[in-house]
Image 1 (tube, rainbow, N blue to C red):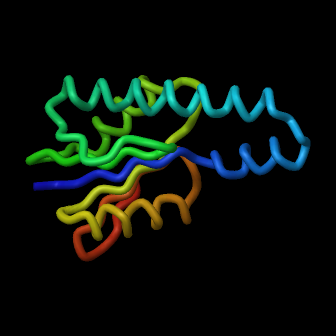
Image 2: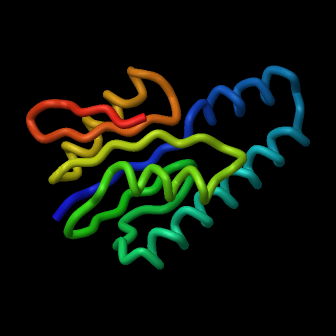
Length: 122
């Protein structure tokens, strides 16, 4: 079994900016965009046979017997046009988490795979 952890890029910063600007409207817009993107990606993942473990806030955790990281990243990008997501994948939840953190440390809108060492996919 393989796991993927998909997480929105810079969502927290956008939310913080709304707070700092006392901008309730932009906060609502961010919320709607994030919800729509996460729902869209989750629906596509389900169609592709992924088992959704978690889907909420700005993240999705899923599993499947075999994950093609490049194909999954392409699915994410076509399912969410308004928000970028980064992704980590591995053979355990911990490996997927580590891969996500590695991906985010190497930029945004990027994927990483961890199997004892890291691989990056743009």
